[in-house]
Amino acid sequence: MFAVIIAVIIIKNGISTTKETQVQRSYNDMISQMVNSEIDTIEIQKDAQVSDSGLAIVHTAKGENYAVNIPSVSGLMDIVNSLATQNAIKVKTITPSKTGSFLSIGATVVTIIIVAALMFVLLQQMRGGGGGGKVMTFGKSRAKLHTDADKKYTFADVAGLDEEKAEVEEVVQFLKEPKKFTDLGARIPKGMLMVGPPGTGKTLLAKAIAGEAGVPFFSISGSDFVEMFVGVGASRVRDLFDQAKKNTPCLVFIDEIDAVGRQRGAGLGGGHDEREQTLNQLLVEMDGFGVNEGIIIIAATNRPDILDPALLRPGRFDRQLVVGAPDVRGREAILKVHARGKKMASDVDLNEIAQTTQGFTGADLENLLNEAALLAARHNQKVITQQNIKDSFIRVALGTEKKSKVITEKERKITAYHEAGHAILFEKLPKLSPVHTVSTIPVGRAGGYTMPMPKDQGFEFKKEMEEHIVATFGGRVAEELIFGDYTQGASGDIEQASKVARMMVMRYGMSEKLGPILYGDENHDVFLGKDIGHGRNYGERTATEIDDEIKRIIFESYNKAKEILSSDIDALHRTAKLLIDREKVSGDVFRACLNQVGEFAPESVLNDIGENTENLENKTEE
Image (tube, rainbow, N blue to C red; front, side, top):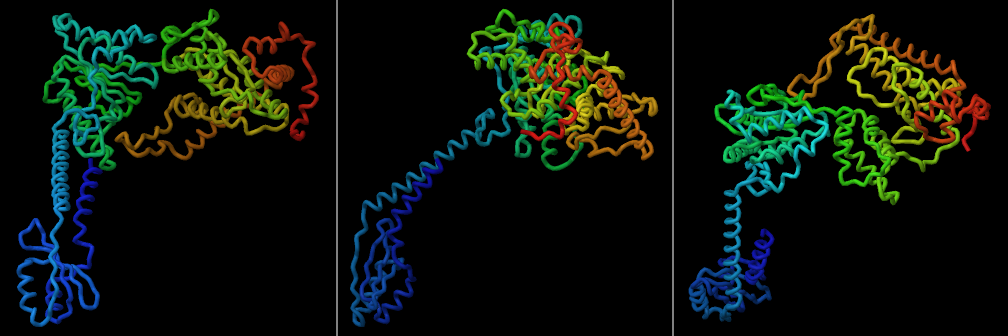
């Protein structure tokens, strides 16, 4: 629309430029030249829109031309006639073009109409409701009111969260049958906060509530409240609750509420002041002087530690529902839900997949089956097999296997011994899980991997953590025993071992020398409204003792790993040879090789790999 206005103005100006084709001079300069007999001819263009004004094109005796605006044509003619005896000035009168006048008038009228239309549209948008990105509607809520057509999920689509479903089903029942609860004197919960890691099903639960509730359901993200303009966030909160009050009883779902509900008090800049105003308005609407009966707030976050305490108190969020990663039964149920609509082979065992996906969330499991389907399609298969799912598990957990990557024979042997060292220690240390897969195929940034069998365990004893550090050093120790040197490939192992040892000493109180004391506070994010940072709460002497204890744990674990591997060096050779030949083996095949059973007879141990390993580091890569 602005482009049209500019075009019209340009046309109008183009029509009126006939007056500006000559050099402009003043009326007094022209009269002075007339008196001095310097003017030869005057062409008068009378303005048809004004009674007596006009434009004079002056031609001097020297050949100069210029234009003069004439306030009165009749007055100019009187002066010319009075000077006729001194100087005969030729006067020509030019009749103005009617077409040009009509075009000029038409352009002016069109411009006025367009500007008026634009003002009308702006006023209509200013009066309009809803967010939607309209001009001057920043203060309107962007919450979406879900209709029955939008409600595609039910509680049947939520698996692995039985207790969590029971909690939210109770809220839905309260909305459907309030008398059942009010007869006992119960009041409806004002809010429910769902907390948990990303991908555990918080938003899916909210979608299921929308599909089951049978009441109006509003959904909005926490980031939709705050904009660049001051006061917009608080205005949107007010508008959201105004809409909710018109549709009671109803549910309001705020996803990622930590975007607006962070703890107050930081005071670092105007942006945080605006966010705090939004939070204050939300607190007032949820449980202030106003009464919002029949409105239940459901919110979701994966950062409950940073939320403002006033937001978490009863009366605002009466319940906190922890939605965590599912256990093995929950994972199997989730896999069954996501397997719907997928063509599975008869060999697919979802229970086995559930056993090996410890720590996977619902989103991870959905992604796992989707990757398996994509892999099957890539191989032009008609159905998804168990092997497709296993290969996708490696892809999701560790990264894509780089089977086409070119590596030298020396690198292949180094990786084989490195992973063999890890695998043997995982198998021989009694507190650790048995090996699931060993591979020398590069994945991500790693040259290979050793994957123990995952297990559902919420607690870890000190002995388990110590043995985990021992197994972590298996790769570096194997390199040192076989090649007399070590590579940088164990840097990630060293980092992991050091982190576990430090946590044992400083947080878990597992040092007999230092005792069960917490050393050091975690640094808090400045945006949490807390201090910018904390200094350590111990002195230099204690810091030295902490370092000594960490070193003790690390060196004892390293020496234990070296002792175990050096006591059965033949097992290290056998496992490395197996990995060089097959690249990737299952835990059962690895254990058969380690124990020399089945296809791995004692006489099949090849010595060709051991003959050249002592001087392998001196070989030149081909």
